[in-house]
Structures are given as structure tokens and as C-alpha cells.
Image (spheres, rainbow, N blue to C red):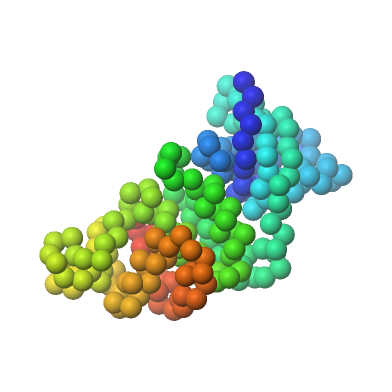
Length: 220
Ligand SMILES: [Zn+2]
């Protein structure tokens, strides 16, 4: 059976002579592995498909193993702009690593492909904010993070996160990740904002970046 889908290349691993195994995030199948055979330096489209961040339209054939084979390919966007700025490229690489590290399942109400596609496109507006927003949306949509303005146990303002639950100062303990109230509000914007204008102007401190990264590592 042939399957037509869109894909963003996440990772490419050399396999035998002139072959590669790719991991791609698809529009409708989640993450799939694809074997690409007989790679040649002359086939630039195929080489681009094997590079991370490239967006393509592909036709796949399902094999008996879990690895699909590629039947047809047309490039949509190689996202070359990411390779012109180290901060953009680093943030984009961390987003891809986050997808590969978490065991996501494709859900009907949350399209990770579309989120990654739009975030890669807009990354330069504020790479740190885009990166952290991506992590928080991933955690929230996978059900690992239950972000609330109020504490889960009382009516006070939440300022910390423990096992993905929002807690006030009194209900926190030493295991909780605590935030300044201002930073907790920023986490809200990063997690729920659907507007790039809001992400563009948000200032991300080193401290906030470290805490959101720690939160992601803890919850996935
Ligand atoms: Zn409380």
C-alpha cells in the first residue's frame, strides 16, 4: 500500500553502502523511519531530504518491517535560513531533539508537524522563546503538564511545578521547580500563545531557560 504524506526530516543515520535510515515527523503518521537507498551526490533533492529540517511531500510504501521505503519525493522547503544563524540552528536542533527524546503519539487535536513547521519558519523572531514554547506545548499536549494560574490544592497563585502540577508556595516542596511570579506568567504565554507577536517580545532569562529545560527532562 502506498501512503502520501508530508514530512519534516529529523535525523539521518548512514546504513550500509550509500543508504540512510531517516526518522521523519509526518503530517498524519507521527514519527516514521524510512530507508533511502542508492544515494548519489548528483541527486540533490534526495540529499536535501536526508538533511534535518527539510520539509517534503513523500510517497511511502509500508514494508513488513517497521521501516517504510521511499517511492516518491518532492521538496517543499529545505529551511536553509536555519543554517545562517547559530542561535536559530541551535534552537531548531533542540526542538528536534525534544521530539526524538519524547515518545509522542499522533493525536487528532494536536498536529505536531504543523507546530514544528511554523516554529522552524519563525524561529528567528526570538529563538529562545520559540524553543521553550515548543517544549511547553509538547508537554501540555501530551498530558504531562497541567499548567494553571492557581494552585492545584488551594486558591492561591501558583508559582511552582511538581510532577506537572501547578502549586502555590505553601504547597510546594523541595522537589518542585519554583519560579518568580513574573516568569510563571511568561510560561503561560509560552505554553498557550497562538500569536507570534507575543512570543517575539518576551524576554527569556538564562534562569528561565534552564528551569524549562529541567522541567522537560523531568516530565518526558
Ligand atoms: Zn496551594
